[in-house]
Image (tube, rainbow over all chains, first blue to last red; front, side, top):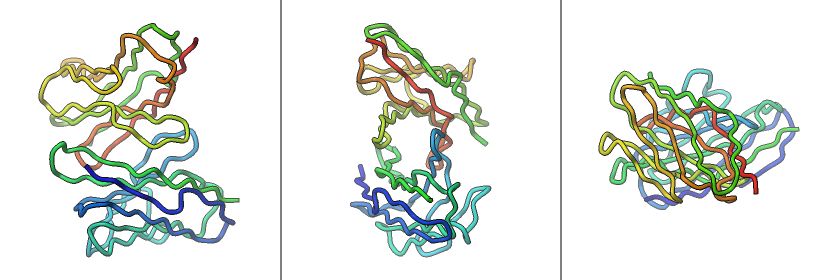
Length: 115
Length: 110
């Protein structure tokens, strides 16, 4: 299994500013992911955070808006840039260990409100 | 590409009665399927998973799901609902990149 922590747990930000969300895992994992959950909606995959290389973004998400860093196998950051109220969401990181029980583990999420 | 469709956006049941949450999947190969639950202001919790072993999968808290390839379905059931089952439920497909259904909100009436 894997235990994931995220910082901050919540924040209220002004439009036009940026927020960096941190994700820390208690063990080394190859695959880390970032998801977004807009209010009342389901989860949508933003990107795969690759260690030592650029993140792989899903359709509809771009690096300029959501830059991601992955400096090592236990840590990643997601920045939400030039925020607008539409960015108000819960942002979750997750990891897939690739080992039994072959499950994906989710962090508690960061609740972002943009005013 | 893989996707799931949750057929009910909202399900309301009385405490002690059965719960049925419906999910259909689309996949070009044998999928891994999951049900997650999200309680209000809480994180995601894995209820159960199907990974091509037994078609009837038992999960936590009395939930189970049956994989039916002929119907491309993976419905979630519980024989007797409890007040604590009130939450959002997501049907999910994928191996490491997951695709979430739209979610089903379950309310339980006393």
